[in-house]
Length: 114
Image (cartoon, rainbow, N blue to C red; front, side, top):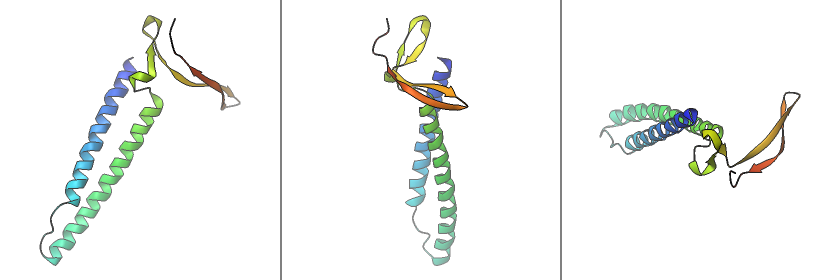
């Protein structure tokens, strides 16, 4: 459970960072013009550079979020408690390893634990 709790905390942190990044992007995009031609050019160049960095950061955060969601069952409705405090995924895939390749054999779905 410890790894699952850490993954949930990290997901929450990544989501809040994405939200903060979106707010900064919106603030930069809605910033008023400087008022003169040279000031506008300099401000637009600086804003463009900053927007590119924020978008790259957002893409990295989104890929980390996707990786977390693939690795851990972060939604509590996708896991069920089993005996001895072990958590099980309610549904998933059964795979076997043959010659360094994983082959899907079938799917499983738990509805109730004995």
